[in-house]
Image (cartoon, rainbow, N blue to C red; front, side, top):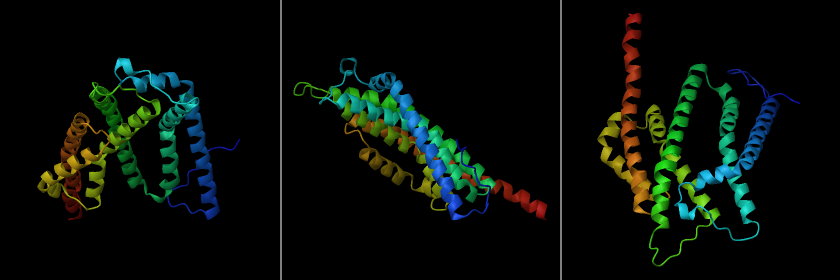
Length: 256
């Protein structure tokens, strides 16, 4: 059995064939991780489905399917989603190992630090989406106008809704990372962000309206953390800009 692909050193020269061979090996590792993650998720699919159904009201947790094969296809689809989440660390790590040789060591440490920051933000987004956003959104939507509608929740529609909401809120929680990237590139500054704070709030409100969740409760619950993240991003940008300024006088003193 062939071993894992070797990581090239920084600025190490390699032929096109060697790069393609490394890429092929890393793709095999990624596919293997996806397959293994999906199998593990399928083995524990009862627990996964129960976890996903938990935000629903107690009388709606047994979902409807329409068609002979739909219970099986829905289970496989959910297992694929869960398998992708389980395999995501391996996928990101393999992609990073492929591109890392083009990055110098100091920049590599910064990228890894930002990656850990992104993971922490994503985990916070999933926690907020699952324990705060979804239960309130689902409760509102499943109790809306019950005088005229008999609510029957289809399994495939519900799980697609859950995935869409969670992915959307994870993307929202990456706001500080995006703003720090724009500050690093010189597109934005903390002074600009402070001066255009009202415009920033307006833009985040427009994004909240565009996110999944057609009811006002869900929109408000998405908007509040977005405003907090935007405000926190301003202070992070300010701290980020101050770091080089602290080292400049010391280097100037040494040079003098």
